[in-house]
Length: 357
Figure 1 (cartoon, rainbow, N blue to C red):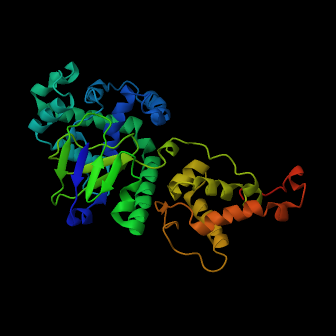
Figure 2: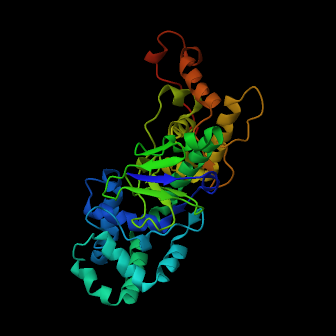
Figure 3: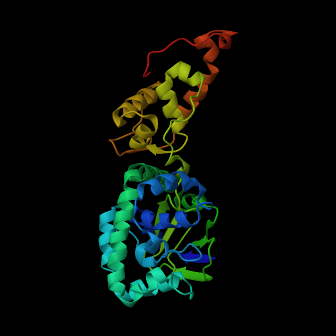
């Protein structure tokens, strides 16, 4: 177990970030343990087809026997949403001695794989070679998927911000992951791969929480001297690789239209307008228009509120439906006999609607 002690100032400095570069590095583990990372198998299938003749054996050799990866390849982001190229430039500036030390630490005293061992004699050259290979790997296998990944990650950030606003640190940490608990100013992490029993004071360094697509359990840097960072599985990871909209909600589609019903079904978990558009095969603008109609119906007593569940632009996040919208969906189901017909209405086909409603 690892314990992170946070003082009041440390809590004030706690922030969230997502990193495209970290996702690329963490995804390497899926190639070695596909059964363990079952949710990412759809991506792995596409990645194998997209890889072409690129030899990623040196990258796969970076993954240690317990799924750990070198700390210099998973730096704490400087920005809330860190771009791949910016993080890659940081890696290119890592001192050669740290490159060699971090690779050795990952393999826990075991011999470093031969594909890396020769390069460790010249760690600066190895670092640059790995950087170029990671760039090619990212371009071939992950860059096309980044918009949908980013949509899920940003939706997680929105959800966490809502939790923090409603209940402070206690509510924020309550459901990050079953292996993360918060009590008496101490954040405790039960990690699934070996770590020493550590008690780490944050001591003014701030804590960064990072939702990620390519993690299954909480993770931290191997070196306790690294900037405190905790990665955890983002909510809705399974939806990242979905290409078809969810199953039609039946009666709900008869009452409000197929497209609006599909949007309501998608909003069981937070999603961005871009992500909803991808899943439903429509434009982000169309999603925003349908949401505006649904909000207007849900809040028929007055103007629709401008809250976290409202969309503000193409990359805006859309939270789970507020209580009135959820209640509206239930009311529609109960109202079916009155709208479609009385007893026996279910025996008749629903009225035809124009396509796109």
